[in-house]
Length: 127
Image (tube, rainbow, N blue to C red; front, top):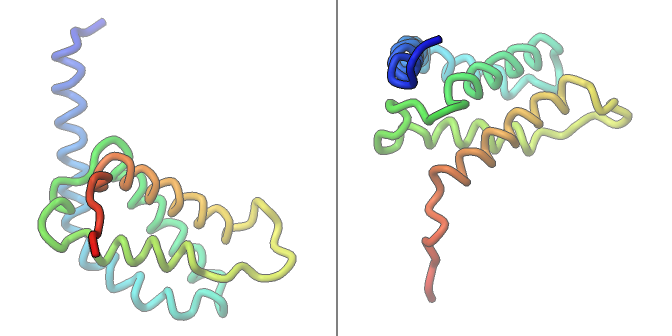
């Protein structure tokens, strides 16, 4: 059994490694997503790639938003990616456990978590 401090230290170090890997792969993932989003309806492989990118984005930001994404303007393209996934049309007759719905569930869960934890809920637009 370990103390709370030891657990938090080990956990923090393992998350730092994940955040470094995420930051290093972000550019490549962004280019991959941009090229794949346009052909999702035409290819099952494109849908599978989107699934894995979504899962990676969700896993890397599951506990806390990656510090790199908290910098000005870094999360905007990924927010657009989540919005694009949520707006993707689902083919008629798709079953609830299809890959389309799994991707939408991941994007919805991550969007909700980010809005609840990091959104500015007190911000209002006044006329």
